[in-house]
Image (cartoon, rainbow over all chains, first blue to last red; front, side, top):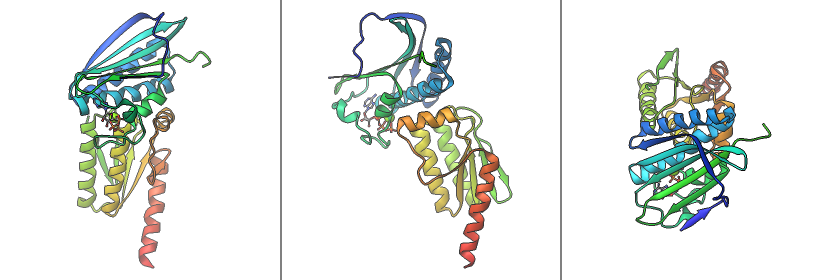
Length: 150
Length: 125
Ligand SMILES: Nc1ncnc2c1ncn2[C@@H]1O[C@H](COP(=O)(O)OP(=O)(O)OP(=O)(O)O)[C@@H](O)[C@H]1O
Ligand SMILES: [Mg+2]
């Protein structure tokens, strides 16, 4: 199953640093947030955007820990059509998500959460897609572009 | 990263000093609920100025702290939410509904004073 709010998979070039953070304990969530801020700052994001990026990382990293026990977050700089951005990929080999559109609904949680993590992160970022199916793990890929208008 | 809790008069002041892990937040919750009973505190201030994000877990935990403190007969004020943190929180769809907030520690203390006075007046009636 495929859920996507992006269409621009081609013409993408990876530049700069790439950081991989293993998510195995709750302190790793904090570490992933810090790396997101560091790389985001280098790319040129504003303070508000850095907090937005860190918040979205926090949500997908915690989902890994809660639902899959372990996984990884990969953070890298991307550039496309002359603009720069950040790409965050959260990957795990956990139970997967059987119904992605249900999981994307506000207030839907199979755990003790508020069910705001996925729909909220989608709002925080510019591009957001979930690739998952029952038994096959989960990949969440999200991107944010540096705002040219300031 | 443990959060120091300062006892000041009838209040407890918890000052978050850096990014917190989920376990640190739960520790803060347990410590506050315990100390409110131990010191018979009338109010609690949680200063979140140094908190890097307010994600769904932090929001949920702060809400439950405030709820538990209320059940223990005291008031909670959250102060110091940074503008960009507030912005991200709202975008994420999170609220601190029903929880008192203040700009900074000074305003937080003023708000607690007001709240506890109102409480005492209501009791005296
Ligand atoms: N990595 C994952 N592996 C398996 N299931 C997942 C994963 N991430 C999300 N889910 C499923 O999608 C649902 C919605 O996720 P979302 O992050 O929106 O809410 P939550 O984690 O339950 O609560 P909150 O994030 O508000 O604390 C989860 O309850 C879970 O069923
Ligand atoms: Mg979640």
